[in-house]
Image (cartoon, rainbow, N blue to C red; front, side, top):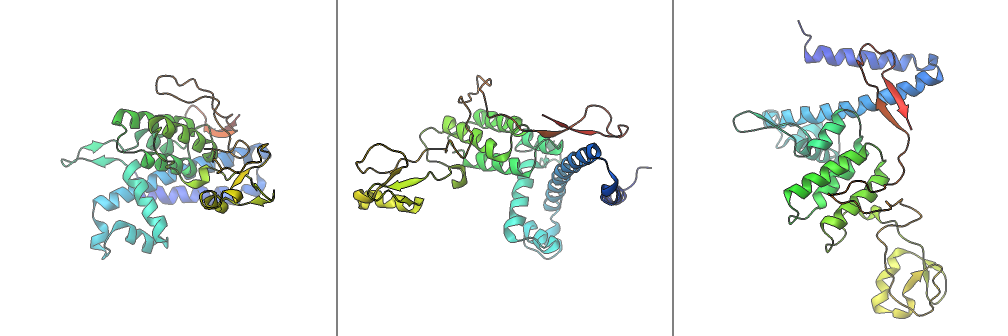
Length: 283
């Protein structure tokens, strides 16, 4: 007889406790493998959490427990802030398996991202970039283009950290919505170093609004050879802060060169239950 879900969870917790207690006795390579293994386990656990939250929401458990919504139940039960609870429920809505009115399972709204998270290939940082990017796409973008954007981001999220993935995300948004305003958070556009056109003293981004009111104090970029005041032009990304792809991706050609990938954790091929060290680091 297969053990119940509670028994499975207790067994998993016992394994984590045993690993924590044995950490001081592990050799360097074993420590590397264990760190990668725990990271992948954390990502898979987050995917399982989202599925459970979707189940709670579908079963209307929050109403039975006296809460108006599932995020309020989650906040009270796990001592999460309202923002944290809402964010988890938004992720559950987009990544968890859905059900039709007749009870048939439906794929997640972001299927490629859901699969990558469930396999442990991406983490919550990459997940946040993908969900923000998809939310930033305007309604005029076709479903085919949305599917391509999501699949492309999920693919590259397995090779790049969140900061570099944001560069790719910006390129995708620029391609699908070239005339629109910047949609992603401001942290994607690091503030360039500005110098006052009159005094040469470094100023902050907050002074940019003066360009239209007081042209003489309009900031210019450091190192500019022009002495005439002009409103500052803000680059989409800073070459010294955010690595940029050397080519713009298109949905017809995916051979564009992206920023160099970093060392990452990958599950090894084969049966993880029989392999003594199922995790490895790959360059």
